[in-house]
Image: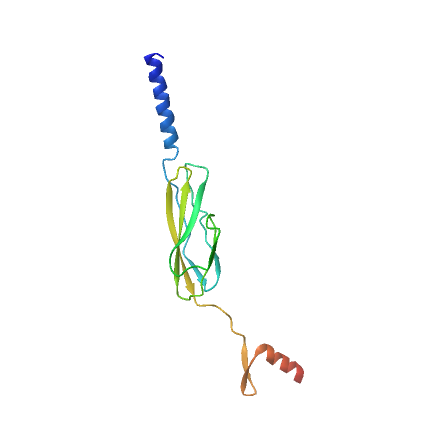
Length: 147
């Protein structure tokens, strides 16, 4: 190899190395979605679908709980949209973190809060009849019999 050929080969190799490392110049952007409000014991779906990386075709997702009482179950923690079964703990706040990782191993994280409200169990409709309170269904049956 002549000195000129060596110089050209070295420059090409340097350019190739620069191109391959700059292809992943920026880490991904993680977006865990807006904060959520849910009832105690509900199952909610987290949404990291707005996460992206302009430099690569795909990213990996990893969700973890970082604060609050333990969730009963997390399904699909390695997807952009896992489901979380909330504990029956009205007034609690849970925080989940989404970490987005690209093919170069670069990562970025974002978190989402879930605020648990009081359990919403509808009470049966009632009314007073004969000095006592009867469930509406029972009263309807009573009314049909007496009619």
